[in-house]
Length: 135
Image 1 (cartoon, rainbow, N blue to C red):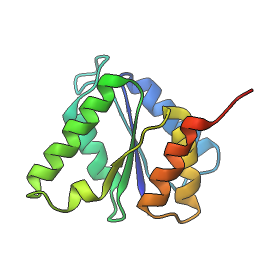
Image 2: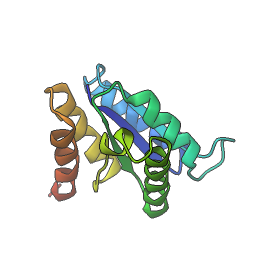
Image 3: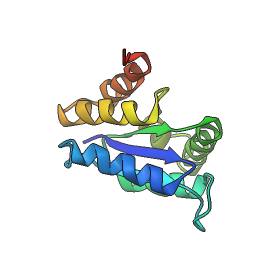
């Protein structure tokens, strides 16, 4: 099953979005919050994100969502580090960074995961959340 990583500047926000996903009935989805820094401060950490990616990946890949611009940069660095560790092989090809809002993208991705979607389908579902209209 595809995993999901939520990158936020706030550990509490990432944890609550993960709780929302599970609370909406997607409790079988492997959602890993990756919020804040390793020492509990506000911000993002390549190590925190990389660790969450490893925990979320059961072999089917991982979709990563981020809250703000520098969280995207941190996620990209974690992806690059994973590529370097594997010699440019598997980890980078098993991870997709979605261009989606954090909450809506997480819910859309979780729905696709629960429906048995592969990595590309889950990433596409998350990306489609960019266009959700509320009014």
